[in-house]
Image (cartoon, rainbow, N blue to C red; front, side):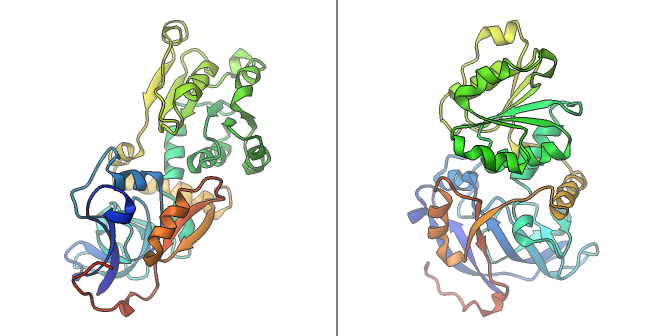
Length: 340
């Protein structure tokens, strides 16, 4: 079987580093499955990796793509829990390809009829939001969580999942025109950054947020820390502003605020496949009952990857940009030894 795959040959600009190459895939070995990939989103982390600026870099050449979903074509010897036609999440990266091999024991089984574009996005933004809301501290029902970058993919998932968990969200954005949209999504309060200090003064001390989710850094991250109740946790999972977070001693000494970092990749690796399966199962239930929705702005075929990447870097999008792979990969021509 032949499949087109996006390979990273060197770290740098996508125009020179990323190449579309046709490869021949072997039959699945013992404990393996052959997957026809369905869809894969383009994340900021993918673009950082291509540039060589991500926290964990692969040996080159490497297939790019941190998240995606595929359907099983064939199972190798010894695979009994999965079968052809099953929809699964591969356990490792390398998703920007029309087909791939995967270890069956690393894959997470999904409902066959689950929307592929929802399925393709479920292990990054929703999982990040869920783990930040549930695994850092135990929040009683009705607790407030404050976050910046509330209109980001993770921020929107925080709003929806917090609602499912019966938590309240105080959402900080840079543009007032986002307010109604996020309120409709389930946000309890949406404010622009300049109004955060005045807003938090109206909170009863017992209702002050105990958890802050910081994706921006710099002054925005510090503003979140100032909203927290004594002993609260300030969790940084991004640095959109590229500005350092400066922590005043008063927050450490008098309010005992705890500052922590969160990296979804590290968290993922700390869980067993069964534990991951349980969390994904919960997220899938919310997707199926409409409590969690992951919007898509546009999909692109793999050969238009440069257009897709350019689109993914645009601001004010209505959803993710995804690569969509053809259903019939047997029509891919036999490869030559050149990139195209």
